[in-house]
Image (cartoon, rainbow, N blue to C red; front, side):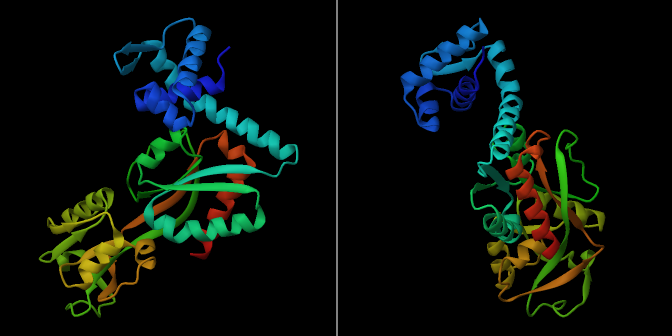
Length: 297
């Protein structure tokens, strides 16, 4: 019989490439990892790893087992959490991954409300942009992924539970003394000759697409994943930018003005989880609190 603890060890070995690194990740000893891998191979009836010196490589059977492990472990987690709730333990654990502007705006409000209503529920948070955050969800490394997609953009989410949260519009950022600083709205083409400051890689691609649709290619002088840095560079008069409203709300735009951009560019903010995990009370409660926080944003 294949045991869940053995699958977790196999995934750690596959991800880290060695028994010693897997042991450090799992918080156990290298002999314990080796022993559990032997037990798993015995249960499987076939080798799962090829050992060449210090390097570990998965066999075809090992690759197949790792591929199925995320779904198996997610199903087990769902079962354990639901049984615990039914038994009245009133405890739970939720692993949340979010993109930075979601972490600074929606997540704090949602988690504060969750803690007040369910103090026994523990939530951990790490940051990642989609599509990496969605990959983490499918790989079993988180329970909820806060993600976004731009209008008209393709996203392969058919296998996931999608909880729509809000629509976030891109706004323009110009220095305070800029000729368009007092405009109610700015056509993106009016900024064609300006130097640009670009944000995260996905937002950067979206910026280029929007500008090219308006008939020009933006001259990007600076690029940074850090939203406060984008605002700071604009405020220093080094260029213009477009950022999601959520990102601007989390930063004090000193020296910069926000202006509406025409035509409007929007992105859909959603919370994603796996179908099995959606039935877990702690996960469902977290999704509800995220939706409530979005409604107030």
